[in-house]
Amino acid sequence: MKKTIIGVMGPGSNAKEPDLNNAYQLGKLIAEQGWILLTGGRKAGVMDAASQGAKSANGLTLGILPGEDKTGISDAIDIAILTGIGSARNNINVLTSDVVIACGMGTGTASEIALALKAGKPVILLNDSPESYQFFNSLSPEKVIIVQSPEEAIARVMEILARQDC
Image 1 (tube, rainbow, N blue to C red):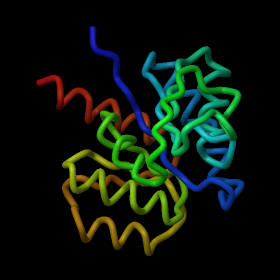
Image 2: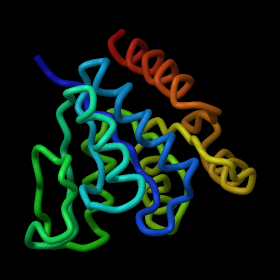
Image 3: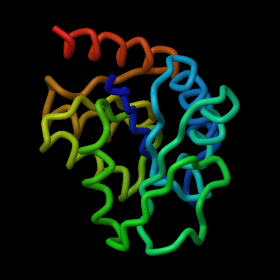
Image 4: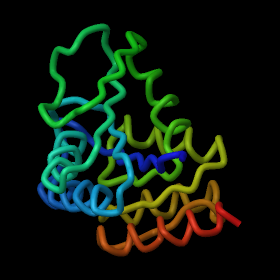
């Protein structure tokens, strides 16, 4: 049976405290649903916080890493995919995810959102930036969902997955 993979994307070293808290909670809630968490795999920012949250609920974590070795990997990653392709791995992140949740904003996160929209993937935005809401919603209003909490994000993921199963 196919496992659902939920990608949580967000800033690394420049992540804000609310983003880290939301990411941890997202990871935990994803694991509680029995879904696989996919992140960029590094021991930094949203990637690490979401992975730690998933592990706190005994979830399975998948990290798509930019380098050719495990340097800088999160301790909470179960399966590490070493790509050796740097930021180009962002495309692998979004194409592998059934749904993408963006928690916070940075240049890498913005690229992942844009790639997800280009691929027709649903994107859930959980951040405090009205500018990013406006910009991404203008690109693909039918694929961008804006939420205010991790719990609301998970509820929206459930709705999306229910529609995909039809």
